[in-house]
Image 1 (cartoon, rainbow, N blue to C red):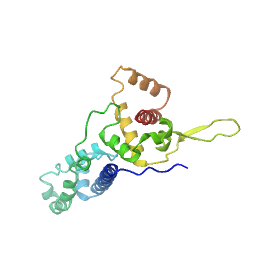
Image 2: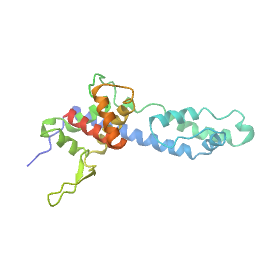
Image 3: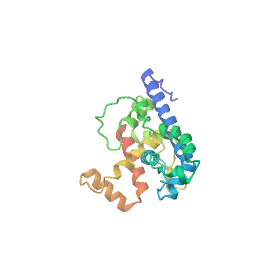
Image 4: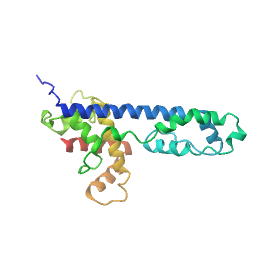
Length: 220
């Protein structure tokens, strides 16, 4: 029988900080979606200022810039524009970068491309002693980064990833892999050449998952 190891106090503190970060991220996403439906945002769209379709850190910065683009003559053209701006001003203030302050000052001397301080601390807090997994594949399977198997009659069929385990950890590793692939084309080291060849053989998202799977095994 396999027993779940008891987490140390430091692990519990780090996990609490990451849970707070996840709450702040959800709050930021909800604010961005609410701002898109407000009348002041419609005024900006009518004047040619686009709204990004995705929701993420770049979209949050984009929304903060849009908050200062309300034209000075909007009060003359639309009598209720000043009142609308007063209602939306608290939402604009909440979009300031408060997310990473929940994690605190963390070391930056990581050596795995795509695994920064945030995913590193989250995995250490969730896993603790990695020796509870026999090898890196078991850790990747625990994170849901391995293909789901439909094998029968001696035939091995592999489909998309199982998506088991902690969604937050898996999301951090996948986003870290996407950040690495943004700069692969301009580099010629062995790791980037392998990723370029993998993108040529498979589609982009498959390469992202392959790099996230590889990083999980390296972490082990």
